[in-house]
Length: 111
Image 1 (cartoon, rainbow, N blue to C red):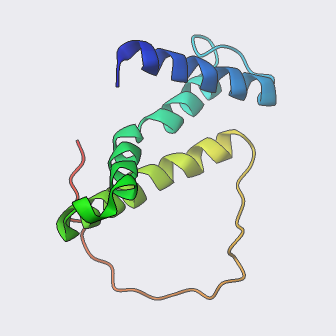
Image 2: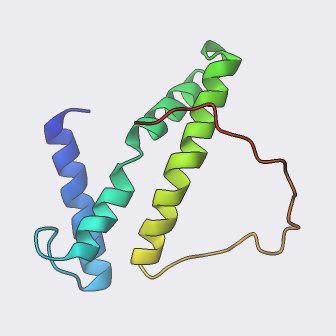
């Protein structure tokens, strides 16, 4: 992503968070800084998953697995943290039964 595009996205996210939470700017309010970080750090995973969603037949099974696991392991935690900073942590699926799964080590690597 181009640096200027990234800067615009960060400013827009900062503006949203500050309006909702009566917070200060990224430079002086750690909450705002953390919110913007948590909303942007997983953009590569979003882009990869979006690419596959746009052209699903073009992705191999391995690419799909890597993209889905990368998104789930990286983005979801950041989204939860951003929601918590925003004072909103929904649990819309708490009525669903818990599914027990065997845990395994993710195949996706993230730097």
